Length: 156
Image (cartoon, rainbow, N blue to C red; front, side, top):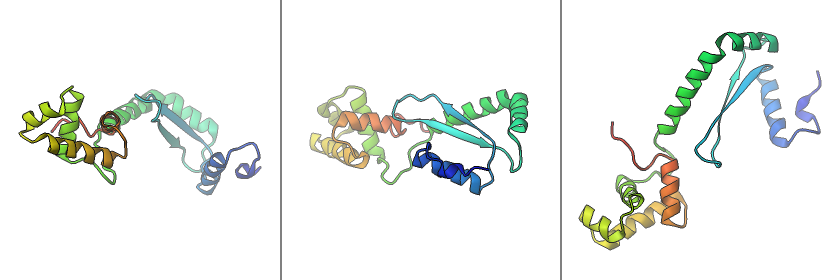
């Protein structure tokens, strides 16, 4: 069998995937991609067959169970989109709350009154939120926080 991991027509990333698959005896699989709310994020899952299964055997499994698998995968993908970000620097509850008020169109003065704070404290929370999210503007912070499920969170 030709060593695809060394094929000249593949990119370095593709070669790494082929090498990984060969090392793990993966010879047949399905890759499913999911629609995203953003062009900057992608969702993909690979369903790999048991070692030794042929592509025809995988096709037969997919023909019989593909609809059920897609239903489960779509539910899983929807659930993943609702999970709260748990990265290195998640927002504090107060930073998230202040960003939510910004998202609702409130000014710094409005937020200060609503949260019984002084405007400088509101500005501090916004600055800390921008730093935690590694962005330059409050608008970017609000967008990034929303995409990472750090704002408008339901307490359940």
